[in-house]
Image (cartoon, rainbow, N blue to C red):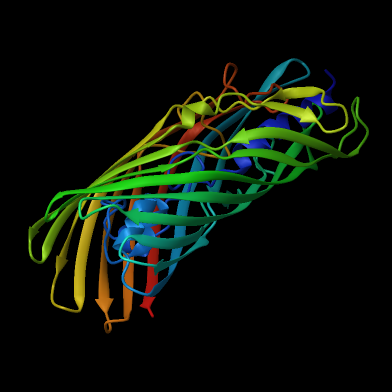
Amino acid sequence: MSWASTKSVNLTSTAIALGLMCGPAFAGGFALREQSAYYQGMSFAGNGTTGPSISSIFWNPATITGARDGFTFEAHNAFILPQAEIKGDHSVTVPGPSTITTPFNTGDIGSDAWVGATYASYKVSDQVFLGFGLNAPYGLSTKPKDPNWPGAGYNRSSKVFSINANPIVGFKLNEMVSIAVGAQIQYIHVRLTNSAAAPVLSSGTTSLDGTSTAVGFTAGVTITPFEGTEIGLGFRSSVGHDVSGTVFLPVAGSLPVGSYSIKTKLITPEMVTLSAKQRITDNFRILGTFEWTNWSRLTEPKVLLEANDAQLTTLPFNYEDGYFLSVGGEYDFNEKITLRAGAAYEWSPVTTQTRSARLPDNDRIWVSAGSSYRFNDALSFDLGYTHIFGTDTDLKIVPGHQDYASTKGSLTGEIDSSVDIFTASMRYTF
């Protein structure tokens, strides 16, 4: 395969596979967890059980049966301030042959972001409830300070936008059991750029732009075995995206300089959320959540040319499954103010063998605090704050790594990452 074909393969495989990902990621892989200011304050402990906030329907639609009479509207805002810096060495073999090693520091490759979420509910009767969620489940971006840094062949910039509409219907079967189902209508837009390599890095930029709209579903159940105890189980299905877009090649090979249409099948992972809430006293509750995400379903989807369905390459995801465990508590300080806090540990699906310069993902420790203020019977406000500590992480793009290309050289180093998240929401019942 010529360089031009190889380059389109390299870009496509990293662009679609990694362009959908935020960097650093905030819910493992390329998902965004920041869908609720209320549950942010407890590191999302108990997010699959009912409570004052209907934002729990993102994880378990059956919690809609805890909504109040009439129509409830919620607007949530998350302000995400990531920090991710890679320090290391870039080595490449040049004609001679000889090896040139260049130390590098990317600076902060994370991009500050706002993530919004909107929810609504309507109580039709004591047994039937309608709900709706509008979320951004995947996204954010990475961009090294210097676009011509030594690893530009592996990442010059990565950016994605996604939006997910989720209408649901819930049924309260009795005082013990509630169930619900919903639909997901999901849109994704990706734009990725890399430095061209032919056979050494150049200032030319290879870019990809692609979009897809696809559907899935959600389902859930809540069980109240006795007063003061609740267990919730929620499921978000995979969404099969037929991504279509273009790849621009700035350097000629077997293909002339220009844009080429491509397509691929990308299936987002299923997610299962198991939560519990236990009332200890009239004004104190403890909560917990365990979450499993089926990232291992992302193996190596095929990438095809739109014109003739010729296979260019496969997408090297090869992730492991992701897990998340959180515990928290909330205390009603008085009739108007509730305080909460929580902590969590997240096991990333990305390992050293699959970690890339676009997505320096790793295991994380969460520490959170938050509060609610009940202004009156109809209007309430929530605040939340989280600091995420990234664990020690190495980047090793060397021969044998799925992203390695000899024309781009080896990239090794250490990743220092952390995230601060500030959230706020308003809840109003008509």
